[in-house]
Amino acid sequence: MAGERIIIATYDYRDETGKLLYQVVRYAPKDFRQRRPDDKGDWIYNLEGVRRVLYRLPELVSAPKQCRIAITEGEKDCDRLRDLGFEATTCPMGAGKWLPEYNQHFAGRVVDIYPDNDESGRKHALQVAESLYGTALEIRIVGLPGLPPKGDVSDWLNNGGTKAELIRLTDETLTFEPDVINASRPIIVSLADVKPLPIDWLWFNRIPLGMLTLVLGDPGLGKSFLTLYMASRVSTGGAWPDRDGIPDNCAPKGSVVILTAEDDLAHVVRPRLDALGADVTKIDALEGVKIKDENDREHCEYFNLQRDLPALQQAVRSQKDTKLVVIDPLSAYLGGRIDSHKDAEVRSVLRPLVELAEQCGVAVVGVTHLNKNANGKAVYRAMGSLAFLAAARTCWLVTTDPNDPDSKRRLLTPAKHNVLIEPTGLAFEIVDGKVIFENEPIDITADEALGTTGTIEAPALNEAKQWLSGQVTTGKTMAATEVYKQAKERGISKRTLERAKKELHIVSYPLSEAGKKVWFWGTEE
Image 1 (cartoon, rainbow, N blue to C red):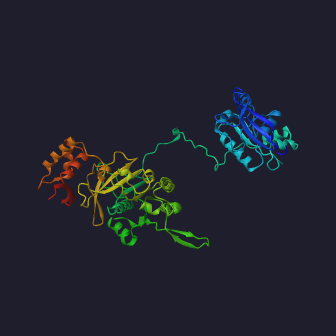
Image 2: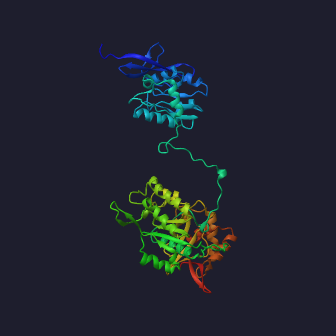
Image 3: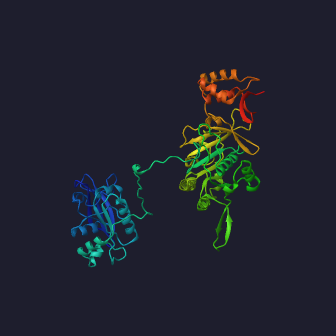
């Protein structure tokens, strides 16, 4: 009957032991189907639950390791090459159906792939080669000259090709190396070859060089003042406030690059730097970038980290001694297309910034605000994606004093400290345009400063309150340094002491003694 489909070939697929698993059936007109044997001598035309294996698998696994293995796109071509004396195989179901589990049979072998001359054939050959790369000893994808469109190795042989010519072409083909666009290769570094390096500091045990640091807090608490304070110290090589026990704890003298989106340079930034005693000749502001349009005309654009990181790097390297880059606020410079709440997008911008910090050896200090999750721990309070905190090695939280929220006293506490060693917090005030730090560090966590931790164990707190209430009473004050000293002698931790202070409504205030500011504790009137 005209158009009737007839079977012209069957190809058995067997496991390593020779057991028949399924057949591929070839029809005329050209068509293929797969079938598996049932238990009654008949066929079931599907492969449900059947393990997929390579064609002529028993011959493949028994072939000596030194034998080259040819891979074709179909069973007909595989059998043709085997008739010429080649070890050959193929995968079932044609192009694009190579499975990773087939790779195990090619470990340490030399593999030659003969693709069909069409787009799907070339893609299939590339897929097989990339899958086998790293398992097979050598791989070649052999192109056959004069092959007609959609032709295969059988067509090439039918048109006059010989076994000797095929071997010559194969030997002359370069071994396969994956294109970097289409495949990845591991970059492996032995830790034995890695030289351990110490941390270099902009501000010892607070702000590392070569890394990103965040300053986190609500608006109006002095975050920008604090970064300008850092800039002023770096510009002059001035001493940091926490010098006790570290006589040489000074900023490395150098240049500073600042990016500020919220404060005017002439009305705010320059006056603040002057009040802080900065050497403004060492401080540059990056206001924007110049970009040429399609007509080669230059115009100014707002700086953004996604597009303009090379410009920032140029600004950093324009002064050979740059030590600090301030970005205030960090979110203002991400670029208009970046969603600050999406981890992947934030990482794509911050990762190059972190690399710039490392390559240039500068401390990058980014300012960011708190989100509205009032009950969240400090490490989760940065506005936007958690990728901000993940990229930073250190994060400092600026808050009001929880014991006296209406005062001008501010607390600087470590919210994240990957490279710090038992860091302590600091307290400061902004007075007449200057940042004035207290002499004594504070022992309070960032979570406690935000009021997001549970209560301290009652017996310790009660003991601290009982003792403190006898030292600081109405009309009786005590120097803060003496309070901390005596509390330590009694085994009262600073953290417990601070909590007792808060619950007893004791406040801190400065007095002038011999021309120096000394902090005292006293009760509220």
